[in-house]
Length: 353
Image (cartoon, rainbow, N blue to C red):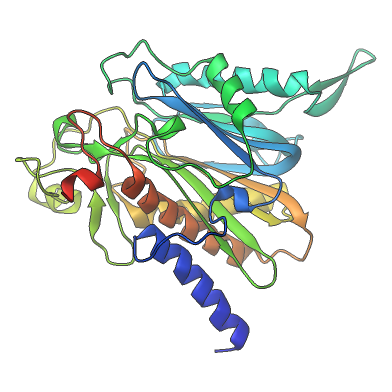
């Protein structure tokens, strides 16, 4: 193995070890904002656990998307089709609140519009700027007993205003505030999910990073060990039952709603819209490695991909896509480990006591 290959391996192993709790997080930013040109802001509502998360790319980012769950809630994803004209977005919004939460994107549009940031369009001789803000939502309406409380346009506006390029806050915040996992035996045996983020930097300057809001029907699995990190609990609520075992033994209940895992993967390397779409598709492998079952009839699993293009070296899409899957899986494990429990729905840290 060459010296560069060894360094690359050590850096990637470090990111995955962080996700599995094998060592302390380094001081260097190892979250989505490690990619230059991106900022992240969360708003967590106080009335019940829910909220929204905004990824800002005010200078624009080439974007793609891949939707694999059978129950998605999305906005402006058609614009990301490689056959369509607009190549760049100015923000991505992830939110709780099911379809109601899509309103958070309107607040981000307003925030960007006030600053003249968006896609330039000539309409009837008038030049206007239209912010392009795709969004996706997860269902957390049953968490906290107040389904009438959900993210709205004001939530999105405040999250955009709070966005910065510092280390991304993780756990039960923003779009992950009301997220849960392991619902295959019913919500009464579920555990808390949340927001997780991870990044890898290579010696040639390539950066690939991910942010994931984990609200899956299935369990969170540590790819390094194959062990369940968080998910459906045993009937006494004190241990992990393992959804893979329940699926094979007939112990799983009919699937319930209240799911969907959402992700954003990003790189500093310049990509085309077609390449960004392929990056999103390859990043879905990270979902499959770290969540079981995934892409079900009651999940709306969606991944957005962003390229800020601050590094113009030739793009090796195979390497970028493979790393996107790695950091996505790492972010999912971090989301479970960083989550905070709510009444009736413990987090990993609660079971460890």
